[in-house]
Image (cartoon, rainbow, N blue to C red; front, side, top):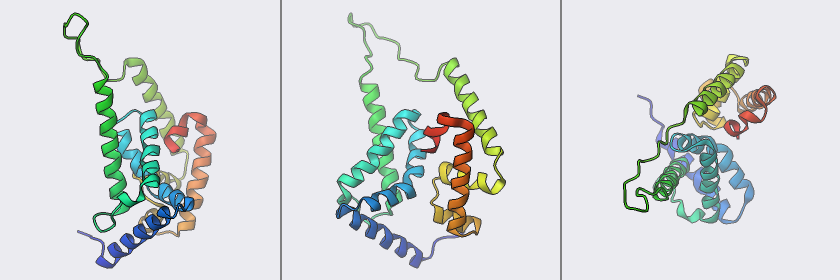
Length: 198
């Protein structure tokens, strides 16, 4: 089983500490770098817990909290991605609890009300299926290399550097592939795919 060498782990920890030090100095470029590197993974965790709109909102909240309180991150305890994912899961659970807390369990006369069915209805389910099919079709119009790059970035939450290493290509090639693929998907799918890509 492959594991990262200690020097690699230390280097990643040093990089995390350096970027967070820049956040403490209110360096907006550092926030942009962190967002580019980790937003896909954070959003991926949240979409497993919440609807798309709420997942987007909580994703923004996670990075806003990092911006407001960069000192909460301790590089000696975990990597920055792990820290953000734990925060995302915690914020997602908070949002789920808040939603449940606002749902009344009893009528005015004290009779127990049936719990609302949170599962999507047939219309929503059909729309989701159609949307997934359109995205799948658009992805299959891309070359295998372009498609794999998009899937790694947006479904697995990998950084450009990780994709380059796994696919054995330069980082510049990954950037070019993602740029081309995203333009294609937005052209084919329009605003519909914006939430999935942003």
